[in-house]
Image (tube, rainbow, N blue to C red; front, side, top):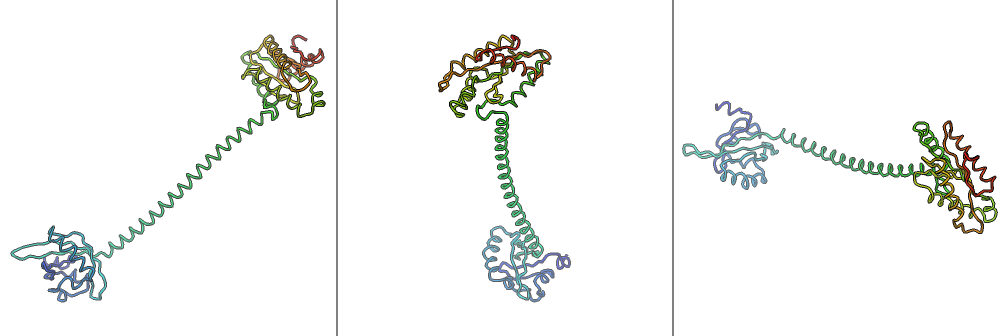
Length: 325
C-alpha cells in the first residue's frame, strides 16, 4: 500500500496544522522538481509565491478549520527553477492516536488549463458565431420586410396598371378592350344557359359642332359629363364603356327587348334634360340589339350599330331597336 501510494498518479503530502510537511510521495516530488529530502520537514509555504501564501491563509486554513476539508482549490507551487506549477488541491483534516494533520492530494492542472483555454476559445468563437448569426438574421428580417414592402408596392402597381389597361383615361369608364371581353363572356353564358342580354350603342349628336364651336376642352367636359350620366342611370352590374371618340356602349345583363328599350329611353331623356354649361342642346342617338341564337360578338355589335344609324337617319335624339327596323 505504501509503495503504491508513493507512485500513485497524484501528488500526496501530509502537513501539520502549522503547514510543515511530514510525509510526501514521489509523485509530488516529481510534480515540482524537488527531492524527497529537500521537501521533508519544510513548510509548504516555502514553495509558494507571495500571492499563493495569501490565498492559503485567507482560503485554505479558514475552510479547513470550518469544514474539516477543502475541495478543488486551485493554486500554483514553485518548482526547483522558480516556475509556477498549476495544481488542484483536495485536503482533509485527520486526527489519529493523538496525531493531527492534514492529508493533501494534488492533481496537475496543465492539461485541464489547456482544456479550459480551448473551451473558452471555443465559447468565444461560438459567441462570435452566434452574434454574427443574429446580425445576419436581423439583416435577413430587414431584407424580408423590405421585400414584403416591395411586393405590396408591386401588387398595388400591378393593380393600378391592370385598372389603367381597361380604363378610359378621360372619362374613367371601362374601355373598348374591357367591354369586348365582357361581351364574349355574356355570349358564352347565353349559349350555355340561354341567359338573355341586350346591347346599347349611343353617339353624341353633333359633337363635332361642340368641338368646333367651344373647343376641345369643352368637348372633353361634355364627354366626362356624359360618363357621369351613364353611371347614374345604369346599375353596377351593367357594363358601361367608352367605345371610342364620342361613342359609348352599354351591356345590360338579363335585359330583353322591352327592358333594354326602356333603359335606353330613360338615358336619352336624362341626357337631354341635363345641364351642360354650354349654349347648345346635347342629345344622344341610341341603337339597341338583343342577343339572338346564332349571334356572335361581331353580329350583335353590327345589329346595334345598324339601329344607331337608323336613329341618326330618322332625326337623331331617339332610340331604335334592331328588331323594329
